[in-house]
Length: 380
Image (cartoon, rainbow, N blue to C red):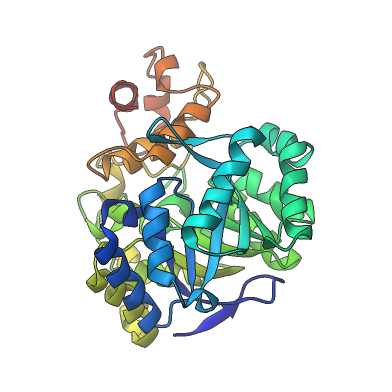
């Protein structure tokens, strides 16, 4: 296992990490098997955003006696109310939820205290300038958290965090499907004989974010590195071809400022499939050639690539984000609580769609957007 410094924190993290979300669907013994396999493979960083009590307890039992071997991203603002996850800034709920995290993980400190997801500039300003951030600062002064981090899916909000000064690292969603911005005028240009593996094919706001984090010494840990498994299936991939776990990991780990990819595991075998990256050949890591040789019709199959060319919407819906959340929700048997929470936070959502279909005329990939808005409204 190779290790990278996480921004300016001084922490050396394994470039393959453990994202805890999938552990919610496993019992104590299964969680222990997965975590022990991670440890054996050299993984030393785990993210626990989940507020569900059992998964917190199971993780705590699995790392008991070996706490010092783990760098923990623990989230502040993720609570459990009436049997379900709720994101909140109410300190009367935030404090006991974070104390519960410490108790159940059987630890008296969290390495990376994560301000739990902020996806708008308005909320960022409110949180940073309010009592929530004062609570986070006090936790750091008391040594209960060692470093301050933040999670977000929005590159513009992430850029605010990268420049804020106190936030030392960001948990951000990175994968080719979220990053790539095919050209509007000539889609065939995307399939040139040589594919630029650097930043040429990335949405400008994401390119700027990665460079800004690198310049400011703000580390990035990655969520959604596999796009919920969508990239493994040629039929669901926006590229019309399937990538491997190793190729997806290589994509994320070659972005500026990225230190580790938080991967979700259902079995020890999933851990091995991810850590195979450490011994993979350059040919096995090569995602660029796979994308370059994708079928030329791949982008006209009705798959949303979240490119944003459908904007602007007269109802002010962020269509790309709604489509992204719909896809993430349908990748699991039940829509995850985080996806529902992100959707609920949107200023306008699928319920605001007026069915004018002007967006469909601008979509270069012929996505039936109005139909997807209806499905999203029913699902979320």
